[in-house]
Length: 138
Length: 138
DNA sequence: CCCTAAAAAGACATATAAAGTCTTCTTAGG
DNA sequence: CCTAAGAAGACTTTATATGTCTTTTTAGGG
Image 1: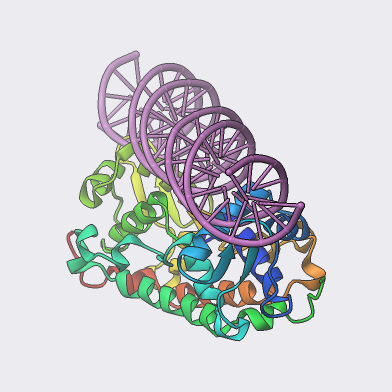
Image 2: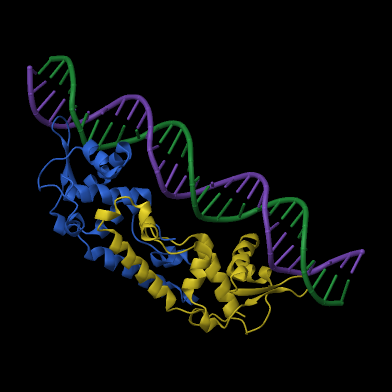
């Protein structure tokens, strides 16, 4: 359980690759897709999601492509993962207690909250800069 | 992401209910299913999995049913969850590095390991005894 | 102004897994 | 040998993951 989907994995690979590029250099989606071995059409969807929330900037037309929306040290793994996978929710009742009609006597509830906080805490400490370090495959 | 499935949720509800019963009392599956509001046929599958690894003991025929396999303070939430959901694996490459052909230059790898350890650590600290406390709906 | 290169958007298709059901078999007690 | 349980496995249905395809929009260059 708790497994990252392909989408999440591809998302990380793709944006980490971009983060390894010189800042402000525009990068073709097709180039990224080839470099990280992800279906280009699928990666396109992912980068569109990134673009909407400003994790990356996109440029259309000739000479277009993508670049990071912020400096890599200011983008956390948590942001990347939640951008495409949605919020980290070990159990429905963590968000909306009313989803869990037994919440009044549910001792499991706080445990899931703890799991959620733990996972988010780990992912929040990691930035794209760290992840891109050493993976300079131009 | 990272969401527990229904199966996992049902599994917890069911075995926590059982843990709230007096020790060594045999409990009908149908009674448990009704009490925790889970489809009986589905819960049957879940308890069969529990039975195979000794988390519960089962008795067939007239007067049969289920009881906990061990004292509730000796069964952790981690065991329960992994029994039905499988091992906690945030990313495939955590288990088998060969699944991740870019592991040589993959800095994300240790992060997932940390997530895995964190989640397991939390779930391992919680026992059925604690979860059953206060939920004495006989 | 057109032609081409790119991303954006949305509909579509397929595959896998989750969620649940049904039927038959085995075991045990009365 | 009849009935009450759980065991086992096939089956169905639904949802989600994983893509693909087509059309549209945007921008640059001749």
